[in-house]
Length: 432
Length: 195
Image 1 (cartoon, one colour):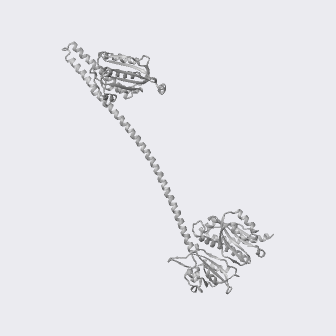
Image 2 (tube, rainbow over the protein chains, first blue to last red):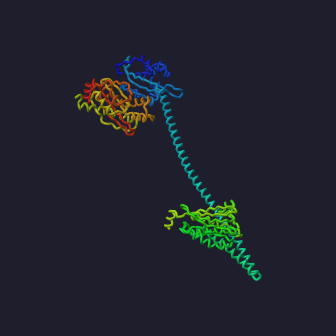
Image 3 (cartoon, each protein chain N blue to C red):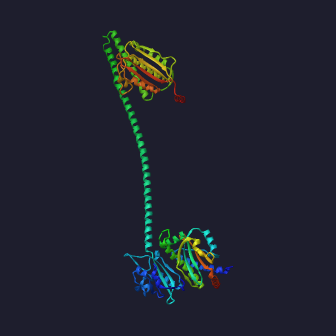
C-alpha cells in the first residue's frame, strides 16, 4: 500500500467487502456496488456527499481524530464489530443494524496525487449471529449441565435423607419390636403373677377354710356334748381333729415353701448327698399314713448313689410325691422308690399301683391355673399345690420331673438330676 | 561490529519511547497501570533468533502485526499469550468468553493497532520519517512463527523487544519492532543523526 501504488477504483466493485473512499475534504468519491446493496444507498446518492453528514456517527471525536490520523500519518485504523457495531448503518429487520468490521487506510489517488482514505467494510452480521447463537447454545448447555448437576445433587441429598430416615425407621421399628416383646413378657409375667395370686387366694379361701371349719365343728361337738359322748366317740372326734390338723399342717408347710420360692426367699444351697438317706427320712415321716392304709413302701435306692442338689428341697419334693402316692393308692397297695444312674444323670422314681390319672388330669398336672385338688382313696384332702411346688423345686435344682400314669394301673413320677455340678456351677460356688 | 553501542542505546531509547506511548494508550483504554521493562536489542539472523524463541517459549500466542515500508522496511508487532489476549478483549468489551473467535480477533486487532500506531507514530516522529503501513494482521501461533517470517531465515535484522504487564488484570505481552538489513545503513545514519 505504498503511495507509489496508485488506486484504480473500478476493481473495487468486484470485492465482497463494502468499500467507499473519501478525499481530503471528507467528500465521498467512490461507493462500490456491494455497498449499494448492503446499505441501500445508490452510488449517485453517496458520491459527493460529506461523509460526516451522511453518517453523523463519524462526527464523534474518536472517529474524526481517527480519520484525521489516517490522512496525516498513513497509519491504518480499525473499527471492530464488537466495539463499534457498525460505521455505515445498514438495516437488519426493523430495529437492528448489520454488524461491520471496518478498516481505514490511506492510499494515493491516481488522478490528483492526493491522499485519500479507503473505508473497507466487512459485513460480519452472519458470523456475529452465528457466534451469538453458538454462545447462547453453549450458555444454555452450561446452564442445563449446571441445572442437571443441581438436580443430581438434590437427588443424592434426597437419597441420603431417605437412607437416613430408613435407618431411623428401622431403629424405631426395632425399638418398637423390643418394647412389644418386653410388653408381652410383662404381660406373661403379670398373668402368671395373677394366676399365682388367684391360686393363693383359692387355697386360703377354700382349701384352708374347709378343714378349719371341720376343726371348729369337731371342737364344738366335743365342747357341747362332752359329757354325753362316750369315750370311744370322743376318741373318734379327737382322731379326726388330729387328721385334719395334720392336713392343715401339710398344706401350710407347702404354702409356706411355695411362697418362699416365689418371692426368692427360699435358701438354695446345693451340694452332693446320698439319696437313700433322704428317701429313708421321707419314708419314716410318712410311715404312719402308709400303715393306716396298709400300703407297703419299698425303698430300693442304692445306698451309695449321690446327686448334686439342695438336700432340703429334694426332701420336700419326695415327701410330696410319696404323700400323693399314699393318698391315691388304695388300701393294701404298694409304693416303690428306686433310683439309678446313667452317664451324667441320676433318675429317682416314685411308683405306685394306685388309681392313676386320665390324659386330661395328666396334661394339667403342673399348671397352677388348671390344677384341681382331688380327694384321695381314703377321702384325703389336698390342694394341688404340692405337685406345682415339686416341679418348681426340681427345676430350681436344674432337674426335670416326668410323669407316666394309667387310669386304674398306677402312676410313676420320675425325677432326673445331674450327678455332679457343672464346672460353671462349681466356679460360682467356689467364688461364693 | 554491525551496530555500535551508541547506536544500540539510541535504538533502545527509540523503542522505549514508542513502547511508553503505547503503554500509556493501553493504560487509558483499560484504566489500569502498566509496567514496562527496558527494551532488549539484538542484531541477528532470523534463523538464530527463531530457534532461541521457539526453544524458550513453546505456548500459543496471539499477535497483531503491522508491516511498514518507506525509508525503512520492517514490522511492528504486539504479541500476547493466548489467555492474556482473551482477558484484554474481555476487559475492553465486557464479553467474558475465553476463546478468540473472528469477532473477538477483530477487537484485538483494533486494540493492538492503536498500540502499534502509538509505537510507530512515536518512532516516526522522532526519526522524522514517514512510513507506509499495510493493514494490520491478526495471527495465532507459536511465538517463533509469529515473530519471524518463514522465508526470511537468512535476513539480518535489528530487533527491539519490550515486555509489558498489567498486574490488575493479569495481562502481559511484548512489543517488537524489527528493521530489515536492506535499510540498515540508512537506519544507522538516521540513528547517528539522533544521538
